[in-house]
Length: 457
Image (cartoon, rainbow, N blue to C red; front, side, top):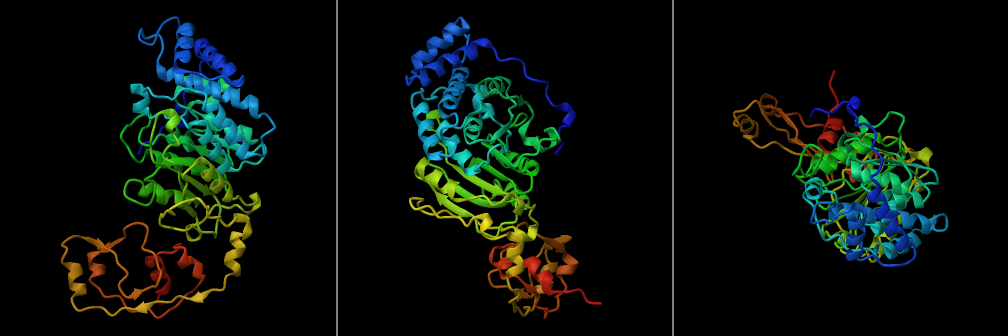
């Protein structure tokens, strides 16, 4: 894939058009005073500000909803200033109260559908920010900030935000509502295009699931954006993302799933309530994933949440460790765990805190044991069968040993047909390894086989 050059970064944003800001400010005043905002009120405000109706092409409902989102941010910032910083549950209640007084986003534009511009509802944004668990003043990157709803929740919890949004109108609204600068890079290549000094210790994101600036109907887009953000994340940092429900080791997202696991350790995969996006007119199955860019010995938490309150409880349970414990994980220190869900998160499973066991020390304290395996006798005709495919290469398989509990290799392996036709000798060496490397799937059966077959002089 050809990646754009950092030199091709877009020019700075133009100032926000005053009609959109005027509508956002008017809506914010009503929300701050406790009033409700009906669709008819929004239509009237937009018509007055733009000097014409939506039917006449003076404005679009997408632009109107964006203005309402900016209004929610302004009202949320005013109400949460200082008093609720250490109270995620209180922030969730405030977000619900504000969002609940706004009209449902029931109308769609062609551009919105093509670019998949579905903002994170403010209550869900609080859950995302809570999962990040920002420390006061910590730098958080949001690669596709939209109008800034997640950023507002992060700010309320004390974080310093670095924002990027490729859509000029939404970026301008975010800049005005948050009083922050917003860059305009393509988030699919955020690590390549973002200015070099930006080194976040947190990333929060809700990327488009199958659309980018250049392509549509590409289900791998979300995963590529996540991996690009992980690359920019500092060692010891955390990434929180809303992803499609199919984001796992399966066919559609398998490559990104494995790439993400090579950069960071999965801590949480939480199935979100199906109505989490209802306020924004969407019903879609999504998951909240949390990655820590550190060597983590604890198994990831897999759970379902029926409500946002349950989601908040689970998100807060997956705690962060001390910054000095963070280090970029190696392939041997990360789990290649399969995805599974609990039936309910009514009693959330508690994750082992990263700080509960220093990853580097945990491996040193674990007593190594000889690798257990069973030698498999070859069956007559196996070697000949390897030659019958007719091609130069054949799928690789572990031929002479069976290792209890060993995971399959994450990606397909091949060997030459000539090598496959030769029956390998039965190994006798049993390397000393930490049992957790096998139990967590950090080493595959093929990798373990190589450990048991030392080179001969």
